[in-house]
Image 1 (cartoon, rainbow, N blue to C red):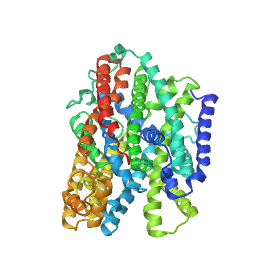
Image 2: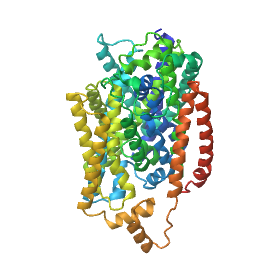
Image 3: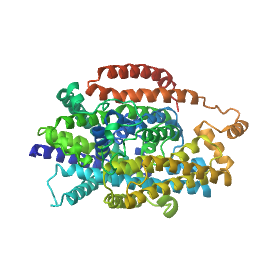
Image 4: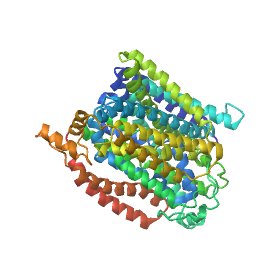
Length: 593
């Protein structure tokens, strides 16, 4: 069943609403740089929590997760095990970030490494790497959203591939437009609406899938072990599967993939936000206390992602004639095939909302580096309000254009997603960890460690594009991580430490944990009444308990829809216990600043 006039009216009404919100917030956002990129610290933490949770759910990511869940089963959730590390943002990393009171992650480098040559290089490095990562995300989004929309929109070109590319450009251009108009204000308040739309979408799909398929049907149409979550060394039924962008059997040997995902999650627990929009949300809150609440709210509100993934996959199992030769297309096929008119338009709006939320904050985040860390810092320090808005609009257009050009070289959303988020993003975590916990780590080590990881990731992509899948992604990942660590530490030890005054001020303001004893002694000598924060032990406990709690929260709807009642009740019990612990050890100990 195709789209009807009612479905098109629902979609058109949604687009019109998003544009109106952008126009309404245009004047408010243009008051200053902080108003445009941080909402003037006036947006309530719970709205920022909704916006940040929406930014973690998008069409392309959902398509990727549906693809791997369709083939791999419940074990595919180890691909997303990184979700549990986000609890660290609600524990210690969120308040550390907010106390810096900067505008961008790159500007934070000056707080940590000072304003000398090393600090400037670190600041410029993370700005450039963040912009490069944004371009990679634009390419990733372009590949997915073009394929998705081509199933529903009237064709604008006879060639299917060209038609998907043109439609992808149109959706991305519209999203960039309303994001440019209202800055973070329009992003956050449109996300407020989009959160409710996506939640209702996930409820509808989940209920439909639950009552459509019973446990006997699932068992009869999936291989043995498909519904198990425990990571085994091998997945035998993946031996003859060739997922998009990967050769046959690439996912059969499972334990190296799990090691890569878990190691990256461990690093992310201690690294904090670095090159994404996560830091922008935390810097936008009114206080460090609100940042902690925003971080926890984001984690709790992200669970609709998994209800969507499982619901759509189950419906795919129940729908005869589904073409899975292009794994990226399972999601749009399900929506177009099984949903009735009216509901189809609403569900389509839900997925477009997920995409537009993620894409809009990514554009807003990327342009903040151009304005704050490059243009007004090195080119035109006295640029006025109109000038910075013009440069913001120009840089947004350039990001989108370059990202789309990169997207035309990629084979699939899955292949690009693994590279952008696991290889490119994950390999740069080592310098992001060292900056918090080792006082001797300096701007030179940070910059060269980041650049080494970035260069290795680009080399890996060039090899894959030109020679194919010659070496597993997990092998490249561990090589890049090792190279980044060696380069970062070596360069640090061969260069002078960060300026003493910078270190003292950073420690006094941020209260970091780890190997800071020399700096701590110096601070206590100069400021004897300095009250050292003694929360890190509780923070680590809360990170461990919170990670278990988040894992159970996200897996509960999975086992519910699979009719696996023993696992559902186990997950529910553990979630209830860990949530109660978090209330006493986390919520009641939130900072007052």
